[in-house]
Length: 285
Image 1 (cartoon, rainbow, N blue to C red):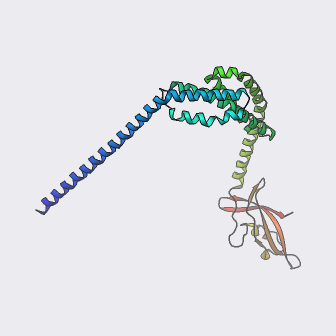
Image 2 (spheres, rainbow, N blue to C red):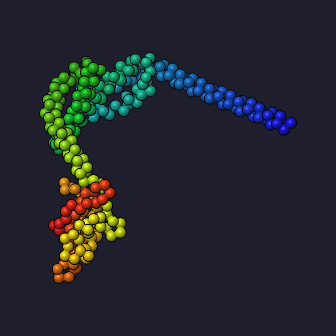
Image 3 (cartoon, one colour):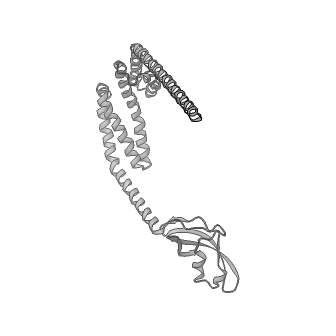
């Protein structure tokens, strides 16, 4: 009897769970349907407003052209936020073909107003002898110009874009060999640094107890007058140099007269596996 009762309660729980799942599924479907209906309505409203927006964008285009005709680059740029804001809701709406055409023309004007900045970046990079950056600036500007020629051939012809490209290509031809040489130098330096790191190993350990570069005291004791008196402390963080890792330390030890002296010394070391090997040491200048 007890087993039968348990089975009945289990079946009831399962039915209740299925009912909950069905309600949730129905609610989710209703929410999705409402969202889809809302999106469709927004799209329909945008399409209905498209002619008015297109007229506004054409007015923006005329204003931009007027500013460019007066060589007022700042004025043309000031209008960009306005027309981009108008056009943004229509991105991907195929029915608004007129808006797409107006936006394509406006984008060409925006690209044209951006070219002086690209040339300024090129000039600044060339002046500071950052030739790779200069090459990148002029190459990006040329790509933008080529896009303008494809998208807005009439505008490109009107502003004399072909002549601008010819001048830009000459600038690119001047800087490209220097940029290539700069990249080659950087690659060679990186390869040399990697080879040095391989030869010298990881940064040697500094003792947390007294600040000794591990192995430094042992290295000095091999040639010291009084090996037992040698103490190496307060070593600086190792720096990778052409002669491997260098660390500057305080060295105390007894001289030939039995007096304790303090010297500041530079140590050069490498790491072999887990062992620090001191290669050389000399009094710091």
